[in-house]
Amino acid sequence: MKKGEQPELLVRWWKSSQPDGLRSAGRLEAALKDYESARHRFESDSGAPQADAAYDALDAVAAAARAAGAEAAKVKGNPEMEWTVDALKKFDRPIGAARKWIEDRTEEADDGEFGNPELYHEYLLIALKRLRGSKAMNFGIVLGKTREDHRLALHKGKSGKALAAVLVKQTGLHQMTFGIVRTDATRGDVMVLDVEGRELPGLAKKGTLMLKRFKPLPFKQLKLKPDDADIDDDADDD
Image 1: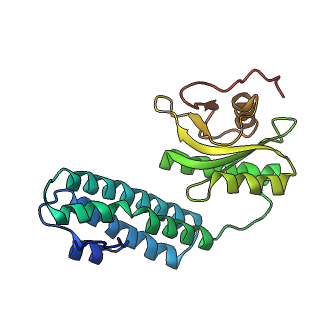
Image 2: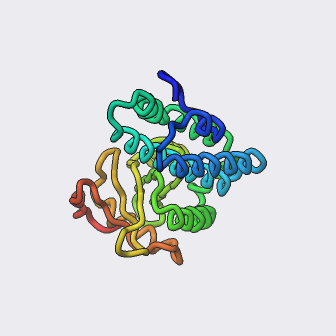
């Protein structure tokens, strides 16, 4: 590894630059190889499943880079290890650029699926199945007057704020928020929202009613977990 070197999302870069004696080097090499394969498949077919696979591969690269950096940081008095730590800390930039590249090229037909209950039901079923497989995704949500009106959008790479903007545009609703949604660690049929936008009264209750309206779905309940404490959820039922 050279001083000031910039990381690349390429196996050949890591093979030529990695320092000797790094046990976690193989994990990063494998993750980069998987990403290159996922990117190649996405270039051939830029559909949502291929995009999700590429996003997952980037997550694995980021985790492997952190592990390799942590190991290299433990080696004292070795300039090459120090340079390796510095380089691996910069992986956020190429990974962020790769995510943006995938997002810009993902083929997602805008059929107004959030404005039509039948189309939304089909969308929600597919999206929640993806959530069950990936464990965590970005979300945007808008609330209407009834359980029939509420809408939830999920995506692996697109930001929650961008998803919420799409919902507002398609539904005309403006009571919205966004964040990250995960599968509950103890109950596989429960979704947990980490809200990053504004706190909406009754969000968990109304989200659960929406799931019941559009069943059968992989999830039956929606919960809130900002800092391990529920947001005020005492709003009236729909």
